[in-house]
Image (cartoon, rainbow, N blue to C red; front, top):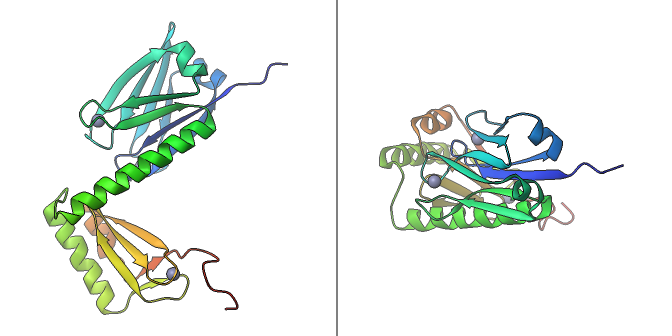
Length: 209
Ligand SMILES: [Zn+2]
Ligand SMILES: [Zn+2]
Ligand SMILES: [Zn+2]
């Protein structure tokens, strides 16, 4: 009996900015054109195997368009790790391969994205000035009524402004929360919040409590 080869595919959703990692058997991928959606439902990676080629349509976080890329079906189903990159930014936008390799690669990409976000924010560059301004003023309002706390019990926190998001970090346990500040719907999301709860790092320095 032949074990079904599994393939892992990953991209970062341009809408919710989460990494989407999906596992499929080679059989599932070959059976029909697949649409592999982000759990948020706002973007999807499309895969089509035709002839001896694999065609992918990848939503790209960096330039906001979909990239059409292709490779041989053999590489698509057997390579240890394939990376497809965004021609405009030069950054990777999609990985296909074995589970471990894909998880490692997408982890590095997330770090690169975080770094770019923080660097742009530190320079005062924002994706949308107005959205950032509104989101920050909402956070300020929530902070004024002491509405920001951490699941570890702390009410002390630090704020980091990024390119298209704001990070709140618990000053006691290091837990973090990312608030998107990219689109008008991000303003609506935070407007309806009365409090913000940071998810603390479990088991971090609270012995005996
Ligand atoms: Zn998404
Ligand atoms: Zn791109
Ligand atoms: Zn905490």
